[in-house]
Length: 87
Image 1 (cartoon, rainbow, N blue to C red):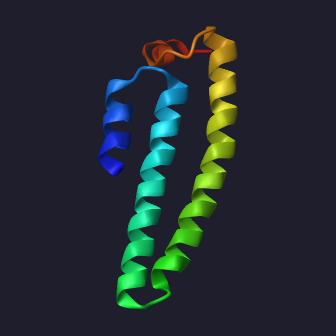
Image 2: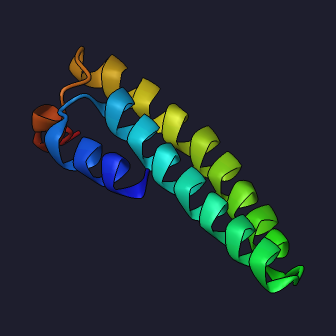
């Protein structure tokens, strides 16, 4: 899952698609933490999952706000237009 998210971030040009791929990468890390936590019979992985989910929620709120500002300013969601955000 992490590789699919990484390829999506590198290949795609839409900000929304890249944002979803970053979320996919965070979910892949969460699954890894949970798997190792289960196999090692420790709770540490579950605690890390809680923190990663907190960071993902904050990233979603701030990221979506930036995407809205970007789309209003440029009129498109193309990443190649990011260099035109000179106010």
